[in-house]
Image 1 (tube, one colour):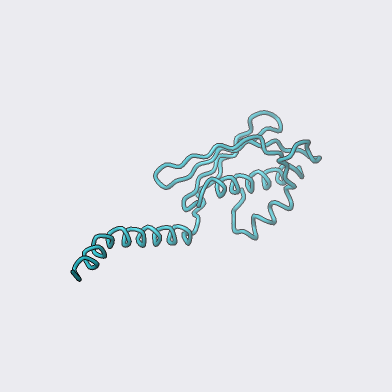
Image 2: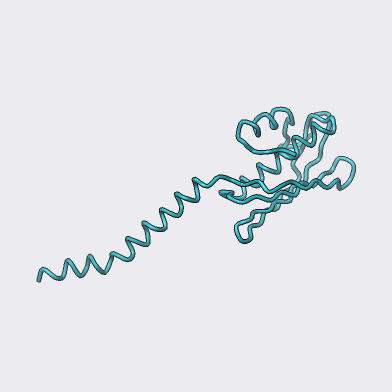
Length: 134
């Protein structure tokens, strides 16, 4: 009769070990450092600019969006503008590489809209967070 608890324990051992292994993989992934693979800037029309970024080690789309936002802020400063407004971002992942295509308008004055960024403040924040700009 004492074999039943042992058999029940052995039967659940693979599930417990699998859960531990999966949790370990999540921890390793969270500790992975992002690797920024570059920024491509494409002027679409006047003040409308596309920023194509690639990176590995992203935790999700938010990391890719932040990388593109940093690129847009630096680009605005390089062009002598102080602000940018986010238009849209698409993000995809393939074989561990995350790619984003973000479109921003750049302007000297604070543009209308909710998704605006102050380029100088954003570039400073990017530097503090270790996110490269152009």
